[in-house]
Length: 367
Image (cartoon, rainbow, N blue to C red; front, side, top):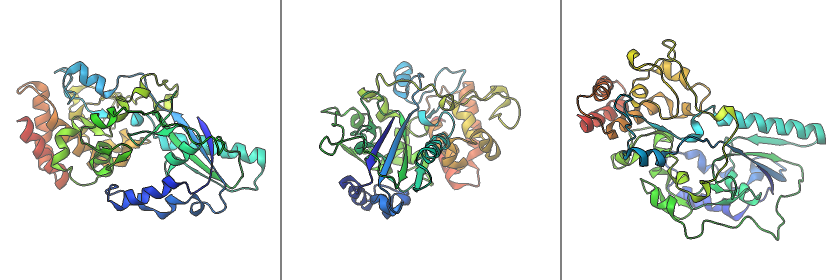
């Protein structure tokens, strides 16, 4: 998808300042960057903002579908497989920042071929001081839903947003009189009702400090005790508010190989995780929690090189795996239980206090 919006200071841009002032951003201090309320402070002389949307949806089951099948919110799965974790759909493949940035830079290069070099341009793949969602709304991409994500009638919400700020005067996708797309959320509150941590404190308003995505990715310390059980088997991000959205029922599936789940063969120390007898680390789709908890820092760097998951760092993924193991429903004495206990006992004496405390908490739950 692609649309063009004028580089204006839309009213919605200023509302984010109040949201940030209320502390809803948590540790994400970069969201308080004053440039985010005025594109002119990001690129001098900017006249237009090109917004691009890239589909990353997969045909694989959604997190809520797996819960329905197993009856186990911790996603323990078959005993021989051991407990499984959930990684947000957008992070199964290559780092979307890199993929999207490559496409955006190619677009800028094409524009220079057609229009010459007499203009300035900045391309951001979710990496700059810009509120892409606001410009996506005014570029006709979609409306901002009650889960705070951009929704499109045909695409749902399973797409990344990238932006190109340019000093060219481009024709906007929407006529001023036409206005942005209508809000089609209606009376639906499924996203709000389904959020396990009540992060959606009101329609169109999120307290990121309560969001599972924030807690498992951006938050650096120990996960607050009040949210641990609600996190379930999530080890990186959360898809629940998108999984339950009716507009995502018929969302198309991407054909891009870059966003398919990464798979790993157990070919040696670089990719082998956890117990050698456990076999290969199959995929980033529902990975083994025990193997994730046991991953070394060197293995982490290899497995998640070029992946968005590197943002949570080694400590974060191990911490998250510990919490998820603490939520897993394991049969005592079974092999999966014994392996989980062994890994957690090893982590409980870690020099890292966050990992050690998380492992102790998990042991207290499953022993």
